[in-house]
Length: 257
Image (cartoon, rainbow, N blue to C red; front, side, top):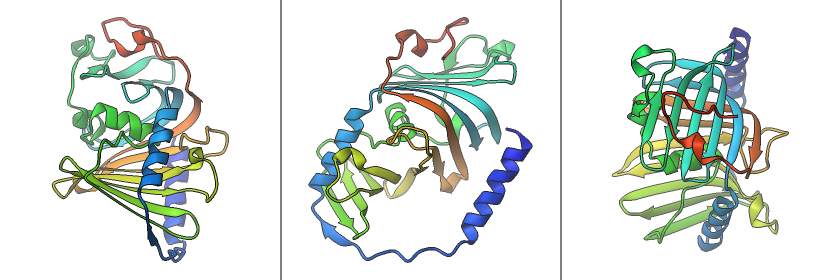
């Protein structure tokens, strides 16, 4: 990433941190069903993504930054991340084919062929493939028959939904406009806990010119391990067809558009 962009990002973060926080409005407990349904409808409405982004990673293999990364997501089924250098050559190709993560590093002679990889070593955060697809898309993974769900909302449309089941707890912070269609729901942050420990936290900000659903930036982190994966979407096409060949890796394969 260019030095000027890094400096601007650091300065902006410091300025935001110094701003006084607005007092949170009191929340009232509300039925969780409508919010669960709205999140599920939003998830189902997302079928695919082709995007360009800049990426920063802290943890795993260390601190890295890439100006140009191609991202292809097939719902919550498959994923491809491909980082390029300034000349358009692939530096790292990561694919989740629905069963396993595969990594190829073309410039490394020992890694010309793809091999299975521990996703935590690459991104610094240990997360399942389908969960990663959902988090990168700004939607919430499928919630099947939660044992408990509680929700609270404030008058400004800010809501918190907590869902427990199968040994995990998910907390989702979102905004929804009263009386607006369910597609207007916006996830601001989601956290996944297992046995009381955080698995990951994803936070989102919006950006003008992108889809109304896709966030402009995504930060996925595990605070306990000082690991974070930050994505700044540059351009994106939502709900477009994606080719099966993009989710296979060999010594030579087609590059992501």
